[in-house]
Length: 454
Image 1 (cartoon, helix red, strand yellow):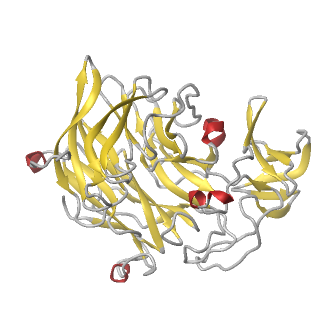
Image 2 (cartoon, helix red, strand yellow; image 1 turned 45 degrees about the vertical axis):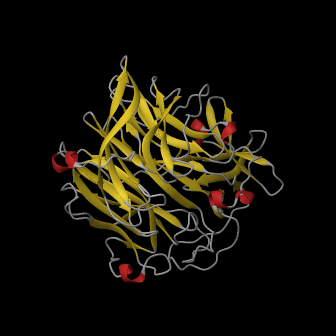
């Protein structure tokens, strides 16, 4: 691999080795970082990550991006494109008094737009304290072809938020309330607080705009928000809540994004990887450049485990590679109808620990970045090909691999750079240190003798 570039670097010694925090600058810095996503938007590389108040999966977490217009040689300064509402921020994993974004996943729509899906959580600890989540309260209602967002008063009485922000009571009668922006509740022109927060303002160690909780509140659960860029990541839309389009009752309080990249098929369908805690992986898809989203109700879950990534085979079949429950072979599934139904394949001889991995195609090759030790260590780029029977993929032959790094290696994301080169964005410290590097696909890569299944 060529020389690496440091794209995201934490500045707090609470979450990163102190000697490395000296590399944190105005262009790459924040308190803490995790979860990389990388995409090539017609020659412009866009890198995204969680920018957080701690190394935990909760607290104050924004989504930040950096761009490269010269294929990864130089990068723009970090820019925050999504900031959650907060009533308190502290540089500590003891604080969870804010909403938060987490787990970006990008794809390129057929019209060239970048589509990014992320999880959004109200004030809570997400999956790390299920007792704070409200699994018995519905968050959406279908009414006359519209998806209405439900919020509740202290007595549990529902109110319905229409797409234009108008709020009705339980009998669908208009009220004086309205919703504006990301959770702002108003009575006429009077601001009442934010529906995603619980109490009063507190400390503000992150120096962001604070607010307070509203008397009507959203359900505490995971929401899936979409952001869009029509100019290769220079500017981004505000968040669009697509949860109501894709949510099923069986998902309970968590249907979340599998971070990394999505897949745009040869037919022009965008397929994005999600997952639910109880049932496993799920795919959602769009045939109109991400304007609307669908999900199969007949086959809502793939035969896979949690976080996963997708590739397209010759002939249009979609292959999903999942996350192990423990060190071992990689779970694999296949869809022959564009992500609408799935069946299980034999596990692939790609050994990895319990960790997200990234998988993309380059011509007829499959490339996968993953930790190769029994724990999250020793990043590896494995190279393989699909094997077919009667035109249908049946397994992956992994025939070569090359090291990405030595030592800690966790979440990663691959993206094609040009016909000969791919980029990898990866976590090389337990928190807050995300590097970018390049690999030549051919040449010396193919001469490696080590195999992922050895």
